[in-house]
Amino acid sequence: MTLFGYTLPLSPSGRSSLVPPPPWHFSGEVVMVEYLADPDVVTSFMPPGLEPGDRPGLAAAIFGDWQSCTDDATELLDPVRSQYRECYVALAATWQGEPVARCPFCWVDKDFSLVRGLIQGYPKKMGSIGITRAFGIGRATPQDGAGAQFAGTLAAGERRLVEARVALTAPAPAPALMLAPLVHSRCFPSWDPATAGVDELVTGGSTDQWIDNVWAGDAELTIFDSPHDEVSLLKPVEVLGGYRFSFAETIAGGRLLSATGR
Image (cartoon, helix red, strand yellow):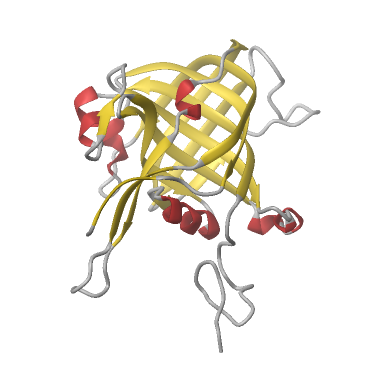
């Protein structure tokens, strides 16, 4: 009998597959803090072929409250399969002179997002993520516009890793690091020692990007030490500012930049 599925587990129908095939559509709200890290440390996280960006040490901590689906949108009627939260670090970089971004660390709170990310080359791990939400009425929500405050927190391995706060002051242009093409490493070690594994540098494949209602403001960012997660190497030496905005995109596949065996 033939077994089906885009990812494991395979089954006779394919319905048990954790991740359906792309295209994958994403909509969400983002809290983001732009900052400067130690330029030498940022450079140390660049794989061969990537160079630091024009502003040495430019980085961002990005919290996303996401909803995702495939073309038929059936996941939206089963929210446990569509909703997740994410926290990742983005580093400004260049590939053959073109601005790109590199994600050295990323955490999500749902298994389907983790596996979907590993397919793309996102370095995803499981974590506990909190993000301030905004609603249309009531006192238990930030109000739209100047003075609104938002926060994001990340814990993983029972340790607090990241805290971010943003106090909005004014509308702003879209932050370039959110829109820059992401360059990922797809790494799958070989199981048979006689064969090579997968080690590819790829683009993230984001299309149909839509960013709206961008507000900027003052920000705070703390990245804590951990015995296992090395994200604190990229702690801020200067916080530049924060953003909150709505964001949407579609991912249908990336592009191979370079490849070697592992």
